[in-house]
Length: 119
Image (tube, rainbow, N blue to C red; front, side, top):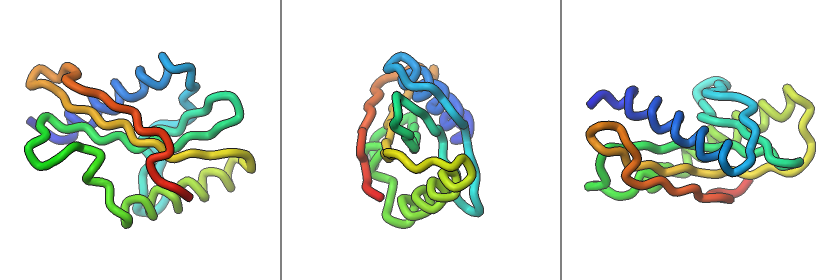
């Protein structure tokens, strides 16, 4: 199956999960240079930058395990730029939402890792 289809479906499910948990979605697929932040959400005064990892299998490990230090650095750089643009100066957090999808693109497993890495 096409990875872009899996990614889009994963981002949809991740967004729905955040909304159910009381978050407001501020931005989707926000880009800065070579980095992209899949979802930017807010809950109360907390701004959350979310990396979504969706796969149709887990043969080579859980989706969240594919995020390395380089990817974290790109996300942090993009988050700093986003905060500058909106004048944000309060609390932030970096989360990962990991999703395993079935062949029919339904959720087999979804996990939300809060404070997945640090700024």
